[in-house]
Amino acid sequence: MQGLKIFSGNSNKAFAEKVAKAAGVELGFCTLSRFADGEIQVEIHESVRGDSVFVIQSCSPPVNENYMELFLVLDALKRASAKGITAVIPYYGYARQDRKVAPRAPISSKCMADLLTAAGATRVVCVDLHAAQIQGFFNVPVDHLFAIPTLARAWREKYGFGEEFVAVSPDAGGVERTRAFAKRIECPIAIIDKRRTGPNEAKALHLIGDVRNKTAIIVDDMIDTAGTLTQAVDSLMRNGAKSVIAVATHALLSGPAISRLTECGINKVLVTDSIPLKENAQNTGLIEVVSVAPLVAEAIRRIYGNASVSSLFD
Image 1 (cartoon, rainbow, N blue to C red):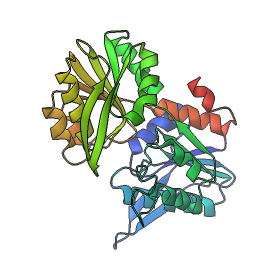
Image 2 (cartoon, rainbow, N blue to C red):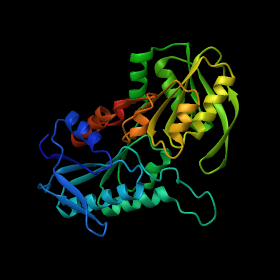
Image 3 (spheres, rainbow, N blue to C red):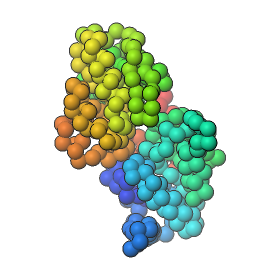
Image 4 (cartoon, rainbow, N blue to C red):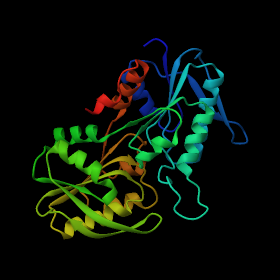
């Protein structure tokens, strides 16, 4: 793996270390600190001239701080004559602002794409983008990785598979993701008809499918304030589900999320380590983490070796 280097921002250092170890390289030596006035200082302590460099940074809260760190690291590497610079963003912040929802509103995820490429990214790797069309916002290659195969494999090993389970999409937009999970654990699917009443607010209206006397598995790409999730749990329990477990890629767990999860009657929550789990979330005993570091490491190895990334999911 000579000529391959992996660096990390401060947002998820433990994840970056797992990825580097799985890829068979040492994590690059760099320092991200703050000047007295709060500005970010980036120091790359080793040569990257002519190397293929990967920078791992989850753009989770504090989103703007983490993005700014990433922009400056990319710029430093570009000016240090790295041959190729790949931004590895396990969680892509601003992904939910992927279109104009009101007059004179920004398309923030497109703005982030432009800033990443302007800073120096020649390729981008993401895990479970909230909106797949964000790939098209970039003028550089984007490798979109999927956590569902990893989560489904972990589920089968721990809980089994078959008709005793039912995979549930919390809204119509998540049906494809839910179907992919259901296919891998060989179970039927159900859909919750949900309509939003405002930002971070949703109302579950109707359940399509049979969950009676089954373990219902809510499959989603992220858990933010857990409002959608708790309403889904309530709907499933009212429709006769034996128990409810959630499976999601990104554990944002903002605001009242933890209290909602502990009070809603959910049995377990499976998430990935794309975002570092908050201490209060770790203490609930509800949340189990499945690592996608081996998936990201294999993608890095394939990109470096000019091999197929899409065949990871065949």
